[in-house]
Amino acid sequence: MSGLDKILSRIIADSQAKADQEMIDAADKAASILAADTADANMQAEKRIAAESLDALASIERSRSTAALKTKRFLLQERNRIIDEVLAGVKDSICSLPDPDYFLMITTFILSHSQNEAGMIVLNKKDHSRVPAGFAESLSARIAATLTISEKPGDFDAGCVLVYGDVEYNGTLSALINEKKDELRDLLNKELFAE
Image (tube, rainbow, N blue to C red; front, side, top):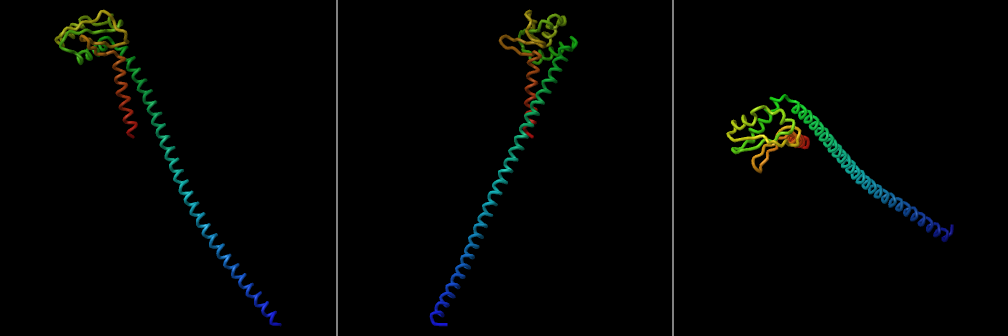
């Protein structure tokens, strides 16, 4: 082997060694880049999974909250329907009371709103025809003031209106029931939405 062949062999061997080293370095660099990219991709995937999990939990919570609100609204509607139904039954029962019991109810209302001055009791047309004899006189004696029954009947189903000058106390059955209906609804609403 001549000197030139030896030099060429040496150059080729050095080039091959250098190329092999560059291939190893390039493979190491590619592996390092791939590892870094894989780690970054994994981290990004974990962040996305965590964010999606939070979104899913928030969505579940919103759905539960919406369902709970709809349930409360339904219960409120149902309770109001039951209140209306019960109070309609109460109204029918009171309207069909025997005269002594019915006028005892009116007497109770009048005594609880009486003033120490002359007043007037307004009854409906039906009650005008069935008012007990001496009703106004008996009440007047109990409150130590004169009460009279208005000759003009009121336009309501049952109960009375008690008038003292410009002041009127509405004891009609509709007014009393509406007052109790509002009280019951307020009470049930507080209970329902306090849960």
